[in-house]
Image 1 (cartoon, rainbow, N blue to C red):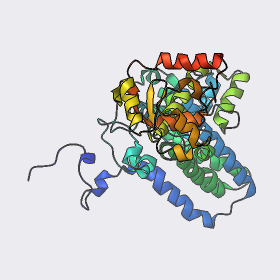
Image 2: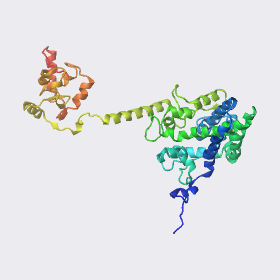
Image 3: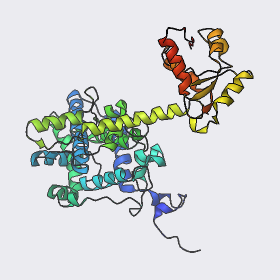
Image 4: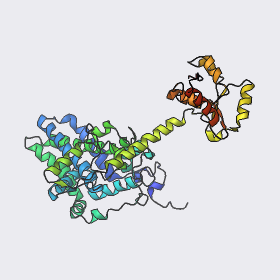
Length: 421
């Protein structure tokens, strides 16, 4: 039997090779470490100061991913002074989601190749895969779409964090939260709650951006790809849940553009700009944003419109001479002409709100002027209903001479034909 070649991800998972498919380093930090915290928590008292510290540290590390890894480094939506960069780089490392360089490379590939085989965490492979499976299972790096990170490779702070990432991970992820809780004598609680379980919470919240934000919600700007807007996802991801907007306008420092939408990451970036820590906040032009919104609304309207009966298209109707029209009426067909289009009202005579007599009096005539306000200005509903009864087009369009005689009769004070629908 010839030896198997290629990356392990190209081979089916079997009882013999399943361990080779697992990315054990990632599993250690996203599965085993949280399990240790969950198993230990019942034996470690959660003290109130430690709970507050865990929540504060959750916000610091989560914000460092959303405002730092994501909006600052991956998308360059704003610029930050060095002190803020250092804060975001250190506390972002405490979220244990990889280095800035690695995280941004994968995220840029995700944006460039959304929902394709080159997307490192494509939701098309299943919500479980996009949430955690892509980290738990090994991926062939050659299959992930290329993304340009030359700007990050030239960033001294990004290079330093990448080179010393495991030291940053241990220090900011586990040691610092433990030592801070030790100030009130709760080293164990600091490690379990502010350390391990806080890491687990931040990771799961961030992973929701790759899974829930591509599965749950609306698509107000574009529905060709999977990203969606949803306030629930925004709530657990510090504002990253307005993902349909973000994928359309990734260089905008905001995810939520409405005042009532939850985006604490945006608010923090804005506040940092007011105190001089951030600058060059980028916003996509409002005109282009509204164009995208309107185009998507029009697309939905067109989809709804396609499901309705608007009558036979004029281009598909037979062309009839005026004599053919009048001959058919003489033989008993209930035809009228409006705007050069012939309509068969046989099925509507009994339903006409103005009575049968008015409909019968219109048969065989061009009643364009009367229908459009000469006698009664018919409603939009009447026009829509009329369009479903058309059967042909008059050669030459509206019969001008007949319309002229009707118009002249009204000028002379003669009683015009009453046609009401």
